[in-house]
Image (tube, rainbow over all chains, first blue to last red; front, side):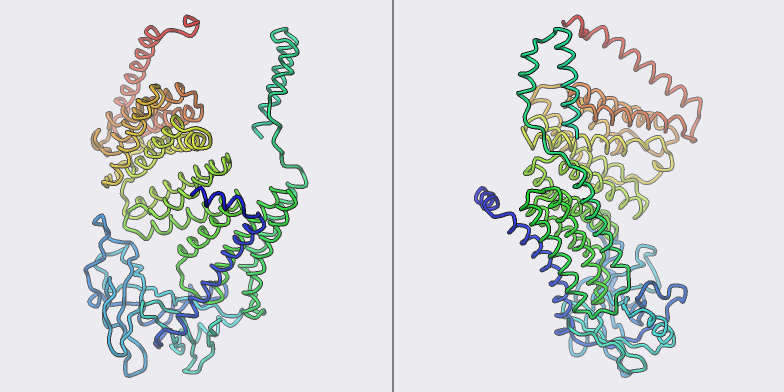
Length: 200
Length: 421
């Protein structure tokens, strides 16, 4: 401890300022590199978007996306595991949703769990958070967010994309890592890519 | 600021005492000569420079809201990095040219730009909507900057972002306190001791109150539980630990203990003050074991301090904490009764003990906190709309008479200051 303090005292102040700035730069870079890792290594899934309440359309310059997998029927959710350590339930518990590809090419939920479960073949496990468990204990449907619900677009392009989304014409290709983290990789309009996310 | 006020008052007193013949002119001169050199105060150009730095930081934040899609994404990313690097380069230059305030503000601007960069990178790369994780990253990066550069502004940014991070995590959690923040806060407290800085001590104290507030709102907002015990326990532990440091430690650690005990006193007074409000008390009392342990530990620390230093101040603080715990834990009876007289008695006794503790230790803020609690409690009990107003009047009258009787007895038993002389 003393040697650390003496080392700190010996270092020139310019170096300390430089290290502080460098660490913050490194943290910002880590965010981007981490996301690039999800896109590069993640397994691709295709998701069908669904219409969103038109009053909550475009806020700023991003499009709100909702998916078929955003709503999980209660019978697909494993009930154990939502309890907190003091016996009360978590407000927005983490959930792992097992997705399987369907004949139409889209991935659909097979089951949902509060702990990671093994998957096989083309199935994918995606991590999300239930957002309505705080309001009801026996909801017929659970709403899940995966971190794929916002897509930032250039100014003026959001409205067109949202109109297409409300006509079920927008499809999203996402990359999902083995730990369940997901990132949007591609946005398709009528099956044609309109936004392709570069790694950097 | 306070140092200058003290010097001005001392100078006035010395001049008066010299004129009245109380002290010889040579004594007055010797006292003046014994004072250490006055600390460098902030001058006008520095104030304007600080304002400029804050405006630049605000401009960068406004940039977050603006649509800047015309610039290519790698270029946007580079702008962010240049912003951070520029702020720290400027800070290093100011530090080298012996302008510490401007160096501090540059590091603060660097931290604010760092926070804006996290938001912008999230926007540019469509990163997941974990706002709390972003706040944690911001607070951690700013705390590292504070540690390395010694910037009080960076510490302020770190603690503010940390409180928001903790508050957001608590809102997602199952009613348990967010302990990672405590580790983060301890690092900040260590910095305050290391720097021996009043600003840092107050920042750490404010952050402790912020965290206690997040515990409060976490319970109330979550399941409409009454969080009186968890928040009282947190305040109790902070006050007990603060008192121990203030009485047993020395130097910077003692100063930190004094500051923390002051903030904890206000937290205790504010948390206990709604005991007269029926709507708050009618919520179901939550009594987790961790809170009970924290409360007992804090009370034990106060009494242990009193036993070690053999002083009445910490002992009365311990009594105040004991009474507060009795109220918050529900041991004095159900809080939701229309007229919980015993609750009122213990709550008022708690604040009275806090006032006496402040008087005995000659710590004015603790005394003010106790009076504030007493005033708010009496107001709450008087204006409470539940129960019989006549009985309420009788309770207040009996309490008042009891207080006057105690005062009279003590007045006769305790030697007056004049007699002591």
